[in-house]
Length: 294
Image (cartoon, rainbow, N blue to C red):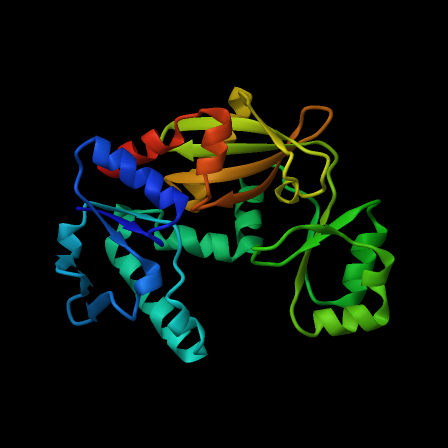
């Protein structure tokens, strides 16, 4: 049985389900929005066995051929209670660990995504260029970093929000005290150039240039996606990144400078791809389904 984890109305889940259906493959949707209110998950630490109950279906690890996960967020009921949310998420993570490489991607890959400073450091150790970056909550270090660069962007350490340009209002004593006392921040030197998104699916790589005048293309409804062949050297870097981060498939974001240099920004273990595929006609869904069937 192939398991698809995410909400039933997620376009990514729908696309892969349709592709598997066309190939005659059996699959179930583990709707994370119905866990733990309806779906049941059991774990026995004595022997490490796990059991998943979805309606009338009861699955052990050996019953699951592979897992595609889109979201790891439990139902809103759990989210409204911090302890319930932590407990529900903890068991989900243990479930991922129990599946090992059957999970596309593994729990270890999730950790790299949620610890973006470590992800950047791991990629830098491969000799791949990353932006000049500071992560922390020291006001003096923040000011010193911004003083060294013409333009600086800031974003959450774990991602999940748009990148913005630092302005003088952000650097006032009052603002720094207020924001950095709450949480650290990621600062990066702004890189002039073009966004490139590469999807790595097994041994295949599909890329597109994202043409946009916005500092963060995700805010630009008029952004253009143009299929693009990245240089062989960058394709090799993309595969090396996936290998180092334990990713069997990923959406990798690059910034290509006017001189043609590629700067790594991020590798996502479960990116959205349906809209990308719609605009580029690149066969990501088909290859993802094949990865799950292998």
